[in-house]
Length: 110
Ligand code: AMP
Ligand code: ZN
Image 1 (cartoon, rainbow, N blue to C red):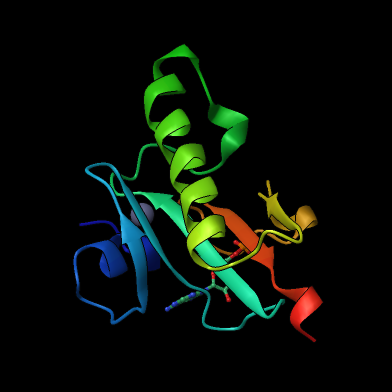
Image 2: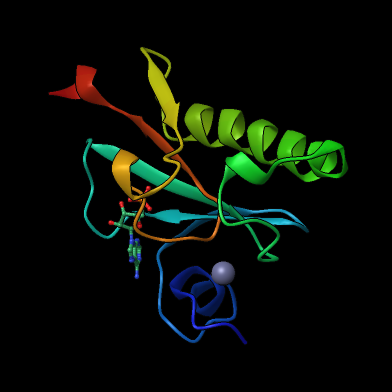
């Protein structure tokens, strides 16, 4: 097991607030939300540190992640608008080096 917070969350060693999952993807609430709805989507396997390492072999899980993100956005009632962000490297604010995507929305509720 890597010393990685998201690997530990996927393994159930660190508690998380699950939103949805598929065979390969886990979605859970960000512990420090930057939007009224802020969900993280990660591949269950620590396949990459960031999208900078993406290759052709990653197409399947990446598509599965994006389809799940759209489903979560619908289920969370974000029809008014949402965004997906992924940070690459410390200069962009990346703090966890297990590739992940931030799904944010819900501003219209405010
Ligand atoms: P990034 O800065 O793009 O690497 O995003 C990492 C995100 O993980 C941040 O928004 C953190 O708030 C979030 N985070 C870190 N630890 C946890 C945790 N134990 N549970 C949920 N979210 C976390
Ligand atoms: Zn990991």
